[in-house]
Amino acid sequence: MIKKIFFLICISFSYSIFAENKISGISGEIIISPLSKMDFSNKQIFYTEYDEIRYAIIGMPYSLQEKIISIGNNKITLLPKDYGESRINIADSSKVMLSKENAARATEEALLIKKNIALYSHKSLTDLDFNLPVDGIISSRFGKKRFINNIPRSPHMALDIAAPQGTSIFSPSNGKVILIGNFFYGGKYALLDHGMGLLTSYSHMSEILVEEGMIINKGQEIGLVGSTGRVTGPHLHWTVYLNKERVNPELFLNKNIIKTISNF
Ligand SMILES: [Zn+2]
Image 1 (cartoon, rainbow, N blue to C red):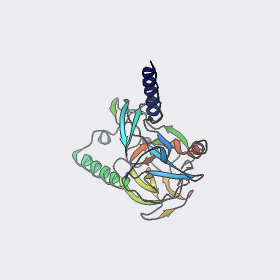
Image 2: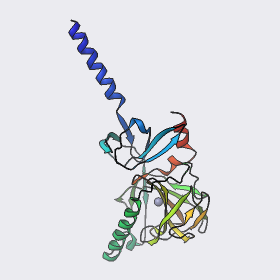
Image 3: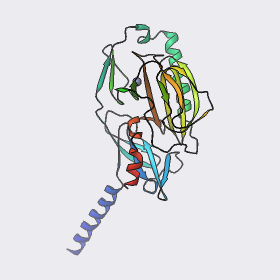
Image 4: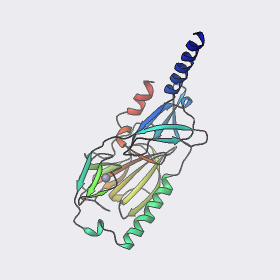
C-alpha cells in the first residue's frame, strides 16, 4: 500500500515538472520569457534586461498547423492562428505571371534580403517601443492568406499602411540601414537593423532618403510612401523580422512588449 502511494506521488510530481516546462508559441507572434527558463546554448537570440532580469524575445514561424519546433535546446509547441484572408486583383499580368528574367531577378533579390536578415549584431539599439512608421490607415494586417486573381499565394507577412504618395515614413526605433535597393516585388526598399536579430523593412517607397551604413534615430524620416514594385496603390509594406522569422509588427506597438515584461 505504502509503495503504491509513493509511486502515485512520483507520477504526479514528474508530470507537474513536465507541464511547467512546456512552452508554446503562436504562429507569427513572439514568446517573451525570462532567459533563465529557456536554454538557447549557442543560438543567438534577442534579449533585454528589466529589473536586473534578462528576458528572451523569440519570433515564432508562421504555420497553418500545430507542430513541435526546436529553438536552441527548447521544444516549443507552435500553435496556428487564423489571421483571415485577403483577395486582390492585379491587372498587369507580367507582375503576376513572372517572365523567366523577372523570376530570376526576384529569386536573386530574395536571397540578398535573406542573407541580410540572417545578420546578428550583438548590441541592441532599440527601446522595444515602436512607433507606427506612417501616419496612415492600416489596409492589410499581418498573416492573411492571400489570393491574387483568385490564385492562392504566400500569406501576407507584413503590415500594410495606406497613405497618399509622398507621405513621410519615419523610423519606428533606433537602428542602422544595412540594405537599400529597388526590387521587383518590394520596389524602393530599405532594411534597418535594430540589433540582436531584430530588423524592419520598408517596401514600395517613392523615395529612399537614407543610405546604407547610416545610423538612424527613432522618428527620423527614412523615405516617402509610394507604389514602386508589385502593388495596387500607394502604401508602406512594413515587415518586422525577429530571429529570421517574420512576425506581426503590431506586437511591437503601444509599449506591448514592455508592459508584458513589467508584468512578469
Ligand atoms: Zn503588404
